[in-house]
Length: 84
Image (cartoon, rainbow, N blue to C red):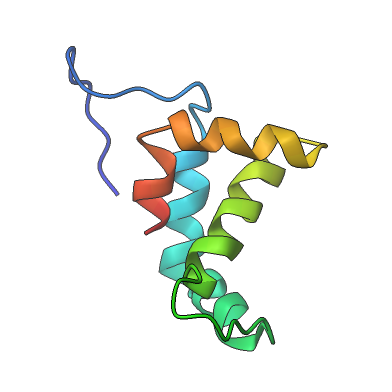
């Protein structure tokens, strides 16, 4: 993983999280987590299992301890994209 400073690039308040998300992707741990999770939706409008689990994981790693805090992940343009 290469990180370089881009003065006008998007930033995240969680500066070290990109390194951890890269670890999760490189090791295959996140893919295994998604594959092993029994979560299943029947609605055609339901979000993808990967998106739900990724959002919860990022929220926990950000230190959120309430369901209402998960919505702050929506404003982070860097970390959700890195996790995929």
